[in-house]
Image 1: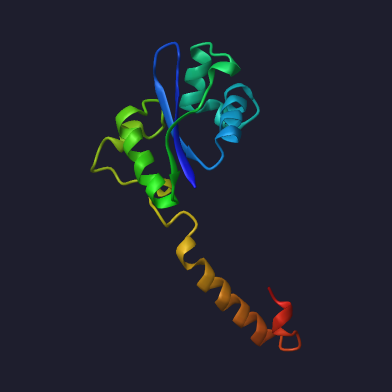
Image 2 (image 1 turned 120 degrees about the vertical axis):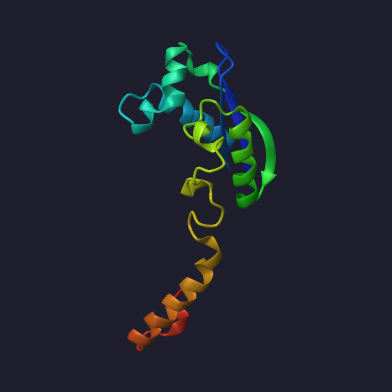
Length: 141
């Protein structure tokens, strides 16, 4: 189950919106990304902003907006919050333009093609059994 959260800059009240299944670890990761110069996220808008406002680690706090959401529902609700309050999100300007195509991250069901996963695995097992007839089907997971 997903939670939608926000991080508000205490210096200027700018806001970042995100979703996660583990709020504690996500908050920890935001803190790491803000101050870890070796990582790619270090240069992202939200982390640059936090450093520009001279925030300390303890000031980067995730606050829950909505809890217990399924993946597709969470994506839609997160998108709406980004449009309304997420001025530190990288796509906030893009998201407010309804004519701009959405980013793949925001398209429900496409991210990992979860809906077809079971069927694809079943077909892969069948093909494997045809190619390897000596192996009993009960040994294949």
